Image 1: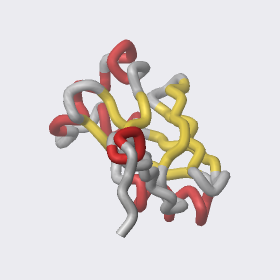
Image 2: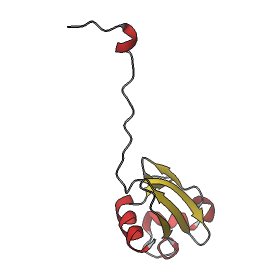
Image 3: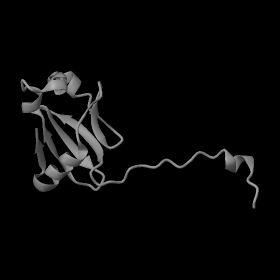
Length: 105
């Protein structure tokens, strides 16, 4: 058995990044409560959330009807996210955008 030096023992584990094609690489807020998204595999398209955020059944997404809040979109661990733990399912988004270039909610 080979002894390890102190530096080798203290080396942090490598960061593992998810590589599923439906993981989101970037998201940008657009006018009209729409998003421009790009996935890890290069697929790009739009997400139209106008009807959802203005719906009587919007639930947690009603907060996004505030344009300032909607504009705070970011990507965390491959998922489109907003403050307040609001997020979108990246796999469903990917399937729709791959098929038609758009996901309408």
